[in-house]
Length: 193
Image 1: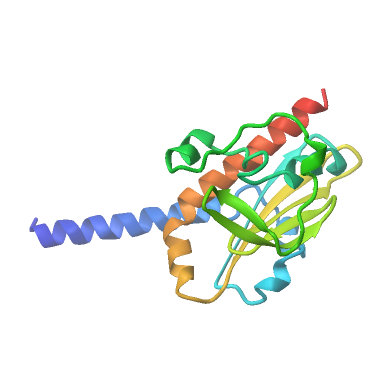
Image 2: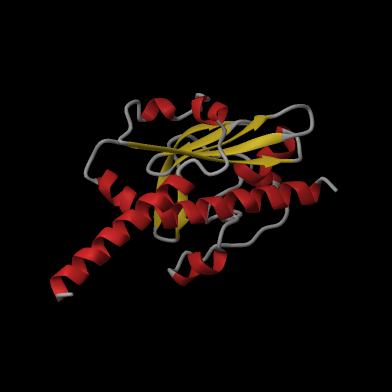
């Protein structure tokens, strides 16, 4: 096999692997109902180039889960994700395992820090329901009966050159968001014991 053929074969395998991985993570944990549900912030990108919804069931009512979502951000509770990995790139993420009453609100238009030198604007903050952040997506909690809820993370990427960057980094981005969903569930369920 020539070097050119080997590189072509590697490229084909890499693309195929990426496509298969994207199929697994784009809708991770989401039901058809989760995917169809209109969330605050969807209207900000009405015709997305890429849309993804990830979800997780939580054995706690929505009102017990919401405080964990409300306090996300590098300046507050972090993102409940892979903190060590985030901190390797200088994020300086805190690790909080309790609800802070003073962190339960964000102003629309204000920045939500994701790094000490970078924040993204909050476009929707609906107490008890969702926070939509421009350049990231919507993180929401929806009731699923009296004692259960579902946490949804929705990304809607506008039609622009940045859509290609999103697709290229979609798998690692999804891994971080899945870890965040699991972190929210773990904390919410632990406080309900």
